[in-house]
Amino acid sequence: MSEQTTLVLIKPDAVQRGLMGEIIARFERKGLQIVGLKMLQAPEDVVGQHYAEHKEKPFYPAILSFITSSPLVALAVRGNEAVAVVRNLMGSTDGRKAAPGTIRGDLGCSMGANLVHGSDSLESAERELALWFPQGTLTWDSAAKPWLDA
Image (cartoon, rainbow, N blue to C red; front, side, top):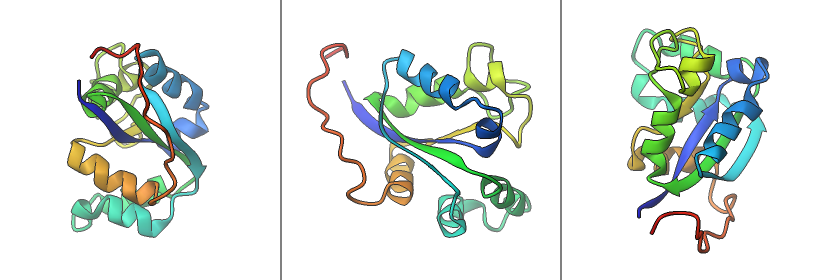
């Protein structure tokens, strides 16, 4: 078993549509734990660091404008192989092409406003969690969880 913690952002479009509870419930029903949660207006400097690899790309200004347009929810999600499980639950980036049963497949309808972000690797998760949940803000005790496979 590889217990991991990953970052999920419930983006402004999902918050505006009232989908926060539905999205969080999908992670919890899968057996993942929410070990950090905060609703905030995304600071431009944090967003800039989060999307640093895209800064020179033509779509970067649109990402920056979208993510900072209204509040979002940042989640720290923990569980067995959490990075891969979260990515599978989210579905393909383009909601029009995402598989039914995924968050984007059931609830999304575009590429740009695609409801959620999830870290794409354990390395990205560590970097992104440090941005959105600075040191000392995640205090969850990851004691034994008998319902997870050993």
